Image (cartoon, rainbow, N blue to C red; front, side):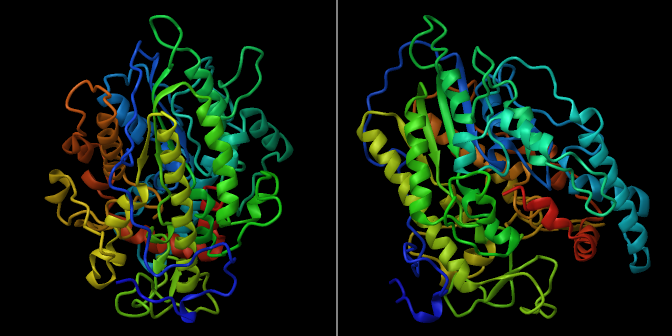
Length: 528
């Protein structure tokens, strides 16, 4: 039975259009939502897979976009037998990605200092870290990374980390170029995160997305251009077999990356102004979603999978302090940076959000997801072969501290997500805790990478498998079984197969550097 909402559960700054609840929304179990659709399967679409989204679809992990050949879209393309034709951006660089690869830093520190950094070496390690960041900054701002590769065809993975609904509707490569031109890079000796790194990453996704006249296209427009190429046989019909859309997390994620809850107001749909907001009003989200839905209807895709928005308060970057506020609650009194211990935490000193704010954010996301489900429901009622992927349900079922460790907090629909057998037998079994390892190996976590927000490679494999299950339901044919080889992924996931011996130390080191150089705010604030 759902608990009664009490005044103590409410944050007074929550807008009235947020329907604050005591229980999370029940995820849909049928991707078709019980609505049959007759699918026209004539002809062979030229493009088997096109994806639109944010960091989850782009392939971001451990503070950087780098290993895009192991993004979940690339994994799906491989299972389709279409990886050799699948176009995606690459970010090869001396520092392994953009803006800052924390795993690479951990391994570089291990090579220099060994498996243990003693307290008297923290200053030397900090200086080494600063030097490494400076080299990465120079490469992308002034070196080879500042020059774009030659490419004429539109990418199939059109996702960009840090983008929300409005960016996906409106932002183009030319806009990104203008932002960089208006903000020339500075070789700052303290703030050494790559300047305009989001725009630099986006250019490698979208610079080739142009019409015949050279006009730059948004991700949605680029997908429409691919869809308009039609089938291989006639050039008519659907040019895309499956279009996957996972977008919307960044309409709320800023709240836990900045630990500031700023609800949208005027200018929420203006890309030049809306960076001041960290959570979208539900009716603002719906207005942008409605606009996106109309654009997606123009894309000639045989099947479209829409993903819901995960509860961002679950990611381990925002660690719940102390114990739950009461028995059976989902929430901790405060959420703060993961390296701040319970005894150390001071609400007057440390950045945080409260349990009441977390509940309001989750409740708003539940409303976002009802809007997304309604869009799919209406689409199917109109004869469109649209599907719902409950990203939110997947993450909720993997939530260690919220549900797995606390049976009293589980809603009546909840069951623990069954990890694939090769992951089940790993010691320890991967979970959603913040990743930690030492000289003996991984000791905690494994589903989230070192930034505490984005999945590891095996985590991306889980997302890929769940999406492929929906694609099978749609009648999509795979090259083999359409099942991810998790034994292979374990070998490819270096955080699992070769844990950094220094990870436990870099966790403490990042906390030290963050206190002195504001590292994580600079690294993540423009990633949401």
